[in-house]
Image 1 (cartoon, rainbow, N blue to C red):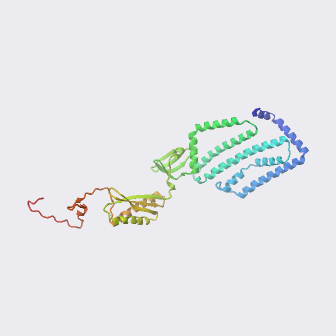
Image 2: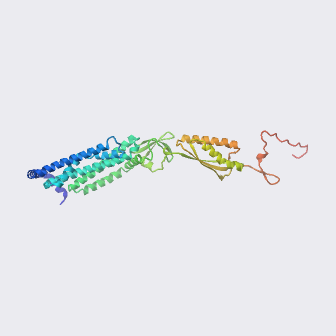
Length: 397
């Protein structure tokens, strides 16, 4: 026999069942009044004990604790325990120890099932929302986005949790819930497909808020865009680009890209490559790394890493210098590069070392076949121009 007709018949005959329950309970109280009184007193005492335990735990945990702390989290769970559930639990425990009429025992079991289902839904709801709130506690600086996200999460959790609780209650009433569950599943799939883009951006927003790859105020770079995050919405992220315009991108599309968070830079690594001319002497080449190291170590916000000769270039002997700027600000990085670069130019001038640039030099061979550096033939500014021999008339030019 189908369960729905039985439920319908039960509902139609509800007044008669109430009369039967009342008559059986009254008869039980008259015939076994002591047991009924002990049961009622025991149920009341258990209820008061449960309420006292709830109150004592809440007072022991204290008030004013943030949800991010374990005290605040447990207090929230205990505080949401309803008195209706405690009363139903007390009566259910007492009924197990006495022998009330069968109808009364069935009613107590039904009430306890309903109370337990809805109390379980409340606990699950508070557990999920509490875990979400704890995870999002560090994102509290973005109050508007967090409040919107928590509002939507609360609605979704309420729909799911209370739907499951209602299905459990109906199932305990012998209602066939297979069709209802199938309908909810098909409806959920249809809604999910219809709002696929919206839900994709919504869950991407939740991932940004709770996983925190970046926050409002961070400077990020993705693709060809670099700028400061102005707002994290449920659909889009707004970024103020360094060039001045506001860039708006959907949450799901942004998370598909590789994002560089410039704000989380702890220190910056600088690699410089310089070249000196091939006429630099070996002693000068050997002294260059130590001179550069001394220049870098003299800077307060720099940490020297290495300096080495590493390549024979087409027009230069190349050195590679690596150091770290221990302050994350970009302006400090550029200032240190500027100061170190000028110090290297000054020091190289004092050492007589010349920086190389792309050139071609022609060498003339002497009578002995050795190359002659043309610079050696150019007189310095302090030297007198060499006298030219006089030629007599008719001598060859």
